[in-house]
Length: 338
Ligand code: BTN
Image 1 (cartoon, rainbow, N blue to C red):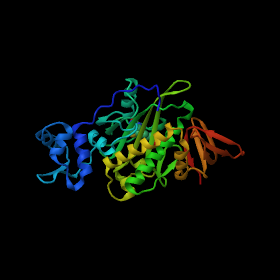
Image 2: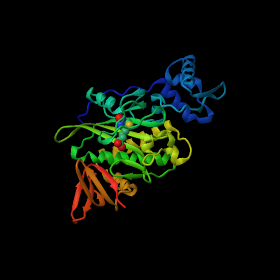
Image 3: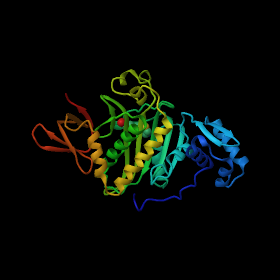
Image 4: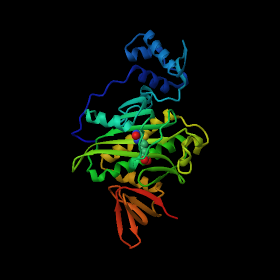
C-alpha cells in the first residue's frame, strides 16, 4: 500500500449489508429480528421494512417468530451491499463496492474515482458494459448478467517497470477464485489470460497513471466470462473463448464468485505490498501453460520466437531465442507454437 495515498474515511456498513451478513452467518437457524434491531440501533419495524426491500430485490427470506429471518436463496444479480456482506473485512480490495446496471467501461469509472482522490481498494462492477475494452485496444464483450466485469483501484508502492507484477498476482487471484468456487482448474497464459486449453475465459487489463519512478494509481480491470453459452459468443470467438458455465456444464453462482475473486485479490495484493511477490509468483509458474513452450511474442511490429523459460522478480517473461540468448519481455501478444 502506498503510504502517501489519499485516504477517505471508510463508510460504516449499510443496514442491508449488516442484515445480509447476519442472515448468512445464522444459516437455517435464522437471525433474530430483535437482535438485528439492537445491532442496527433501529426498531424491529425498521428491520422488517429493510427485509421487504431485500425481498423486492429477489432475496428469498423466510420470517418466523421463533427463527427470525432466514435467507433461503439469493438472486443472480450483483448488489454492492450483498457483496460487502459476503466479502466481510478485507485489508484493501473491496473496502467499498459499487455496482452499475450498465456503464461504458468500469475501468473509466475507476480512473475517474482515482483522479477524484478516492482511496485504493474501491471496486466497481457493471452488469453490462457498452464499451468494454481489452488489451491492445480490442473490444471486450460484456453482455448483461453473464459475467463479472469489474475494476479495482490500486495505489501500489511500485516502480512502473514492476507493473507486470500486478498482472501476475491478478491472474493468480482469478485462477484461485475460479478453482475455489467451481472446482475447475484453469491455466494461465502469459501474462494475463485465464485459459481452459486453447480457450480463454478471462482477461486482465491494467491501466496505469505513473510518474517516471512510481505508480500514482493502477486500474485493474477484470473480465470473466461466467454464464455465457457457446452460442452467445460471436462466431469469430467460438474457437478461442469459453465460459465457466461451458466448462463446468452448469451455471455458476456469480455473486459468490465475485466475492471469492475480491477475497483472493485482497490476499495476493497484501502479499505484494508486504514485499512477498515470490509466493504468488511461484503459484503463477505452477499454473502457467506458457513456460517450457516455444512461443512467438508480438510487440507492435516486432515478433520474437523462442522458448519461454521463466518469470523474473518483476514479472517479465524470460525467453531463450533461437540464437541462444535470453530476452526479457514485459508485454505483448503470445502465441504458443507447436
Ligand atoms: C484482455 O484483453 O484480456 C483484458 C480484458 C479486460 C476486460 C475488463 S471487463 C472490466 C474492465 N473494463 C473494461 O473496459 N475492461 C476491463
